[in-house]
Length: 332
Image 1 (spheres, rainbow, N blue to C red):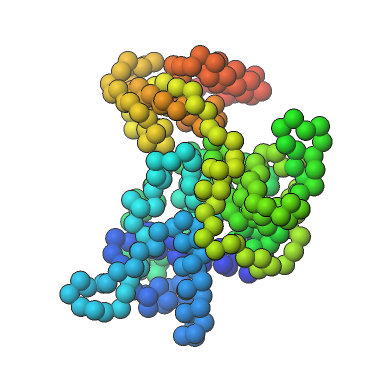
Image 2 (cartoon, helix red, strand yellow):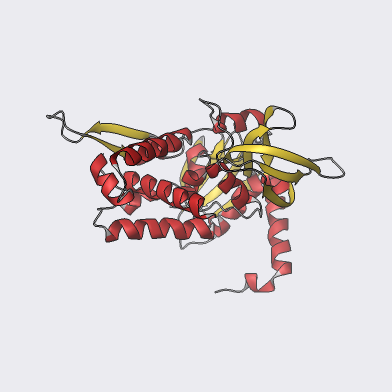
């Protein structure tokens, strides 16, 4: 990341974590002393208001309240974990950019390190933290697409992006120009949402279909996201709908929380492949978005019972992975 963008991203990440990991409202002056040290009154007010607006535009519910219910004192701020957790919608992960990654894409090395560093700094400064608040969903998501960082950084700094994109059924990629508004995970895939400047309309692009290297082509801050834009709603409206096949899976007890949230039926204590752990049977009437990817992401904690074609697809991909690296099949 560039220096300016990196500092902004780190500040937003620190603000998110600071408000998320504390159980009580955090006074504004406390936030200022820790995250905005050395700023003037005017500079702090502008930066703090801009950062709050940025987080809220990405779907982060910042709550404002009084520190003492009996006195009309300085307001404080917090993010309630239960409000920030995933709602029961079709999206696999509903936050749109770096803020989502802070809690959901722990396997993405750069931001996993940034999250750890942010918590470390807060602890070193004497901020009481409840790190369990960060455990909103299982750390199962990953972002392996090579273009992911480019779109994430462009979203944060509001920089246009140019890239080659090959749609399903096309014989060759086409050059596209986008003002990215956010990055979301929908139907088991990562998408970038924004304004397609060639067509003058909002569009959604699947990152796995970006060919070659995506390139930033303008200056930071060269465009604004339309007021009231909900990138999650845009993704749901424009991206291909998730599968509607009924799916039945066995899930190891204590695992598969993302699947459990969307399950229509849960049968506990069912026989599993081994006697060492307890298993539950989950029925998902609408199926699983990006089913094979989602199942494989849970490793040995999830087994497919039906539909048969999904089970066979998962088995084939596991066999292919084993053939590519025989060491995967050896016991650790």
